[in-house]
Image (tube, rainbow, N blue to C red; front, side, top):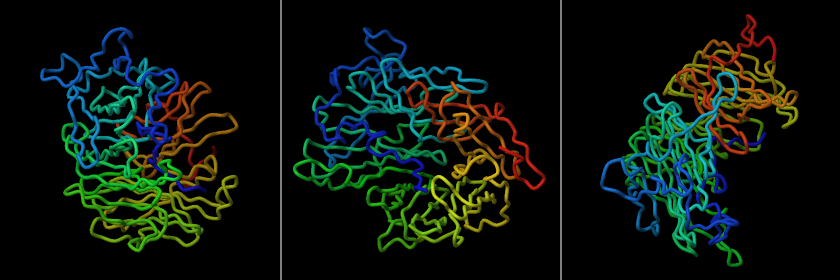
Length: 472
């Protein structure tokens, strides 16, 4: 089974400089003028000047979002990166029904929408992160949206006619009411380095991110005169708490822990001399000061390790011959133990799903077997996420060609299932569970969209007295 990448975006998914990544300076796409932009307000006619285009203004929100410059370190070469002072004026989201207890976010007119797998809950508000690329793409927009409200934060980065210097939000993470955001900077037409600039603050008070915490310079190699963008070390996956920021660096394949206090970093996961638990760090999560991850290797055993800014890496779960896939939050830890891996087609010979109360000391005692996953549905029911008192997972039923979202109320069940209709959105990744809702990154009508499912629309799967499913 291939290693998972929980929030890995890479250059092609999120970076505003996707054309830069392809090594195509000045490429704005066929038939597009990179200096002209359509209205950012989805509900204004195309010939009207959009309020979202209002530049920095000294008044209130009447004039529009009120774009304000965000500090970008001079050492990176700088770029045009701005924040909306009044983000609620940028865009009024609209939703459409997609079946009982299901709604999907509509893409704004004149814009391409990419709902990313980056999301979280802050102060009781369920948030999703969205990349919006208008026709013409003079600017690219990165938005945090409350699924039961409106836009709570918005940033934009400018695409110049030559696309240099350029920048864009490449990834972010939300956790413990904190936001870590990474800005990618390409400073000039032929740079020797690219930069990752890290911002840290409160997602509901985006002005707290106006000053960067730190930045990293990454050498850009050339071959036959062409920049080798995919050889540059990049922060591509993030997790965050009030005490630590964690990012996986690719292709170096290391886990960097960054202090929110002063921006200093330590290296914990990977293959270097500092890696006390060698292996490719996959699927890292953060709770308090601790960063957890799966150290992947070529062997049959995959455990769960953890480290902090001051403590070296060590296993907290390790069972010879078993692959352990985990999820956790501040209340619960869930892990699937897979035995006898037979490859992607056959899966595991046996799979056990365990739950235990989460303890910061790493002693996850009192574990309980909550189901025989193999008897539930498919060998693909492996990766489980934990949030809002539930463990959730997603499978695809090839017999009926429909996605299924599974939810287990912790610690005792019941097991619930949502199965989309033939016209329902694809639902490959659960983002979070909160307040009776399940947020999903979905695909519908060719767009990556946000889908919100009501837990009340899930159906209970009968369970036997032993705690296993009575059937799929």
